[in-house]
Length: 79
Image 1 (cartoon, rainbow, N blue to C red):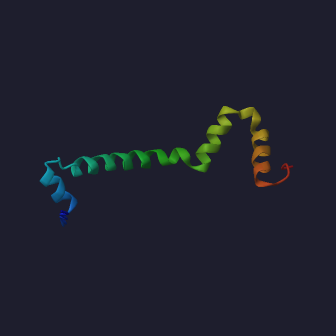
Image 2: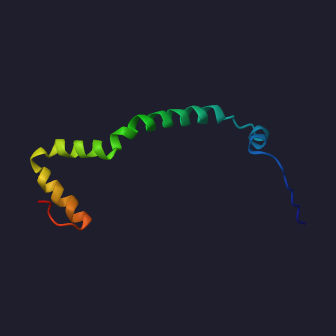
C-alpha cells in the first residue's frame, strides 16, 4: 500500500504547524546589524586606504612596492 500526501502551505504556515518559533524578527535585526557593520568597514578596503596601510607598514620600501605592482601589471620598472 502506498499513500502520498501533498501539502500546499507557505514556510510560515509550516513552521506554525510544527510549533517552530518565528525567527523573522531576529533575522531582520541581524541583517540590519551586518549591513551596518559592512557599510562602516567599506572605507577600510578602498584602494587608497589599502595603499596607505601598506606604505605605513613598509615606508622605506615604497620603491619595492612599486616594482611589485609593475611586475604584476607586466610593465617595466617606473623611471
